[in-house]
View (tube, helix red, strand yellow):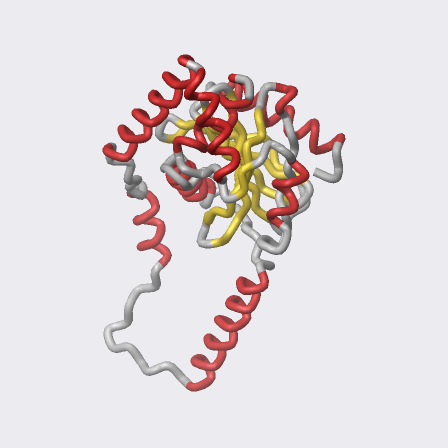
Length: 257
């Protein structure tokens, strides 16, 4: 095993995410390589520091105000609901529950929802950086990662290997945004993690690329082919935009994803 190969897997080793075979290979290399030994020690030190840090995210005050404004005013004396209204509400709830159970509920993002969704993306990204949370399937092979999503999501996210372009595919996982399961494809840029969250949308129109910075993380969002994309990382905005552009280009060339 070379240092370059070990570098792809060394973070997963530190997080306890490797199977016994791969863990043994990486550990054998680390034992004979001073550079990788120091790298593993630094990663574990950073993991311990993150575990000690307070990374809780407080919802913005605007969200509380929007929720309060959306609540109907309570009448002085609440009248008991009619049988018809109870049955109507029950039927509507059953329909929504049935759709959610089949995975057919798509995330539709309005302008007002953008800030809330991005706050959840940041929280999901931070969770993924904790030990054991980065990947559910660990592989640099797109033909291993993409099939893993089949059956777990109604629409599997596109998985594209950008290693030759400087962004190494390392795996994928299921995550939750807006109380719905979505796919997260994980890449590495040098020592930095890029999470690409992908969710189905009811619109097939291409949404203009948007760049934001929240809590020190850059987020590049766009939509294409009935899917919403959010790429998030602590790399520079220009590098994250480069990742997004290369992913979009490869996605158009490789329709299979």
